[in-house]
Image (cartoon, rainbow, N blue to C red; front, side):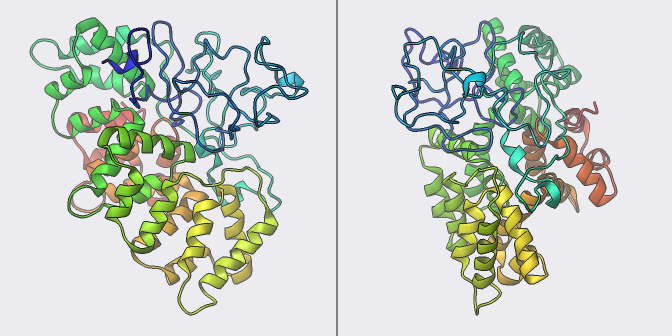
Length: 486
């Protein structure tokens, strides 16, 4: 059965966790795509937990049997924000009955997704900017106006003041934005021509696939199969080879499935690639972790948590288990008094005792929100006169040390964390192409421009020059295309 037909008339609902792609205004949201004429809306599991941009949905809010409600079925309802919503049903005094025409708009106490949430702090481009589809051209997506998860992550220590108020942070810079206008059938025809007959027009393939978002690429694949009766990914595999083929396949994979495969390959077989586990599990929002877990189970038949526990050990296993719960607080508010208490707890669990109470570090770093962690780190420095990163280096070792330090770095400067990952993938003899592809593909719609700037700032050379010096052929050109340089 074609996954796009699930739940339609004559097709039973299947436990298929396919993701059409990302929304235009909330990269890496793992949510429903913006519906387009002629395309069915994919039902994806609702967000579990109150991630920034994915507010807590009360238990009484009625869920749709097919996943997220489509744009045709939620007319008049506010987007997925939970402010002032009753916990059970809608029959309480002051709340309209479900039979009425809809819930009050933002002017009557129910902020809409476009108006009721705090302004974007990291400056993700809104759908009204040039190059993004206008709201009048496509039906409204249920995540439009919500904050992407990475907007809760700090770009610098100054991003949150000691009073807990949010200050302005620099705009993030994606290098791949939605093509507008976008005609998936025309793109499918270009790709068909590029691969038909003798020889392959790799330049045409790169120009199409490196300039479209994950959602748009999957729409192109859908149209390709509709028009020509062939699978686009299979054709790309037959016409390309090597690392170029690997990159194209990664671009054509829905991101939840892509992450699930990366995690599975990291723990399958002999040995474990802990760096992959740290990179993925430490950087995802609650909602993304929950969606990845469902994709993982659909693909491999096992629970991600069980596979992580069976392939890791000790305190690192406990840390991965905690992160796999997808239950980190994602509040915007910073409680300064609680930050002081947590800083004292970390100090007493580490430097002020013989040995280390790893459980305290695990509990604080896996459950506190990123803004709260920033305040905790500041309080720790105030109490001790040195940075918490130095304390972690002194108290821990091995994979647990790397994971805890990664969380600290991600809280403070996420683009720098990924810049270091890219540098590590290309330095020395040989190239870790899998790591290079993973970072380039997953971050290009979010903050690859920021990562490139951090790379230049830290290493004194441009990311472009490193890719040109370490890669070759069409593989190199496609990577540069993701950077917007080809």
